[in-house]
Image (tube, rainbow, N blue to C red; front, side, top):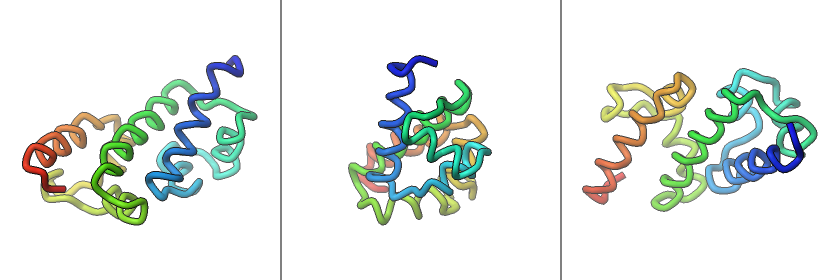
Length: 116
């Protein structure tokens, strides 16, 4: 993959860590790779598989929306908590299972009520 194509992944990982309080271990667990691999993505030494890039992108989208309401210290616990609005499932599991639209639908409803 070209250097220009890999750069957005570096930015997404930085955003996940800065705005979402996520650690390299969190990203590694969600994408099924080692923490060292995530580190190499974050420094632009390697690029994730396109399917993995989608998971990272979806996670960043959810984190960006949550960070509008929560501090970085609150975003990570929200992602890992079981939510009644998600039928007791965790947002991270839904994102990993390519069901991010379910999480986004809940965020849309909650934002309409201005309650997260």
